[in-house]
Amino acid sequence: MKKLKILATATLFTVACAQASATVKVGFMLPYSGAYGTIGQTIENAFKLYVEEQGGKLAGQDIQYFRVDDESNPSKGPDNANRLIKRDQVDVLVGSVHSGVAMALAKAAKDAGVTLIIPNAGADAITGPLCSKGVFRTSFSNWQPGYAMGPVAIDKGYKTAVTITWNYAAGQESTDGFKEAFEEKGGKVIRHLTVPFPTVEFQPLLTEIASIKPDVVYAFFAGSGAVKFVQDYAGANLAANIPLLGSGFLTDGTLEAQGASADGLLTTLHYADNLNTPRDNAFRASFSKRYPSNPIDVYAMQGYDAAQLLDAGLKAVGGDIKKRDQMHEAMSNAVVDSPRGQFKLSAAGNPIQDIYLRQVKNGKNEIVKVAVEKLADPARGCKL
Ligand code: PHB
Picture 1 (cartoon, rainbow, N blue to C red):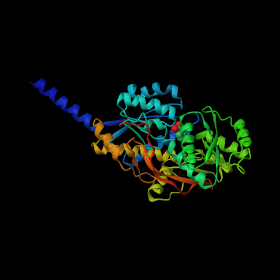
Picture 2 (cartoon, rainbow, N blue to C red; picture 1 turned 135 degrees about the horizontal axis):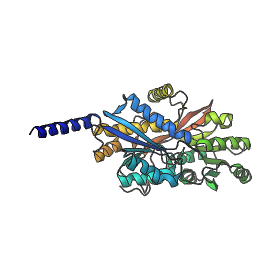
Picture 3 (cartoon, helix red, strand yellow; picture 1 turned 120 degrees about the vertical axis):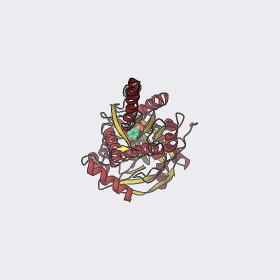
């Protein structure tokens, strides 16, 4: 009898301890090396900043972090995802930056029934044919910034364009988005040029652009590749006759390294450096205080919002991550008070958001106007 009582007390004690020390395990699958190497750390920093601002817990739960460097290498994607899912048994995955890696991650997350929040990679397919109830994005679809640049180019009177990018999903989809909107309004993309990811040998293609003589060039590059491309474009003296446009990744998080070569560039993105709203100013002040040497950019904002979205889901279930369906429902319906401006997710899980036209001035991506208001990705092929 006595033994039984001790056992019952011990069991009660264990249950109580389990509840008090409940943690939510978050696994970052991000690039910490390679062409997108600095982006991964920025996203992680911003995610942690939001959690710190909530007193180190979300919905009363401690957050335990795990991380894997995915090297922006899609072929290692399934193994890296399984390190977090099977070895570390994470509850929530946060990743990645590269679209090819994110596709592998989305598949692994779906198969394992683990919640996935994508803080960057824009692969259209993830919120298209591969869409799923437990997969969310706090960033953009590759189509969105590309599409928004189409009407801007038409308004400037450009009739012919060359597109140039890395030959992988993000570049293809960004330039396809531009082409769709540009051609809808009567423009024509006369050549599509590519280099393999993450190559930065741009000279032969710049020579080709000089001989094609389009009215304008639209480019998608990001990270260190964007730095080199913008420098090479300026160095080739093309800009005076053939203006360069791009999705905002061409100049976000890169301006310090690009220096004067980026001056005046027009890009489209769901963020800018001088939105000057109370929400954005508070975020920027908090981020730069916590991470003085980390530039604030679109990636920081997206990582911060990934934590905000998780918080919204966890709050709705009183911190009980096991109530996954209910948590996902709350995440789908959340209004995220983002530094970019408040947004909601589409049914496919992608932000419906204003896309800003920005211009590089004094080392900043300054807002010119809203290029397209509340732009929703068409989510082609998504059936939920
Ligand atoms: C992507 O691969 O989807 C990607 C990578 C870097 C960016 C934007 C998109 O800056």
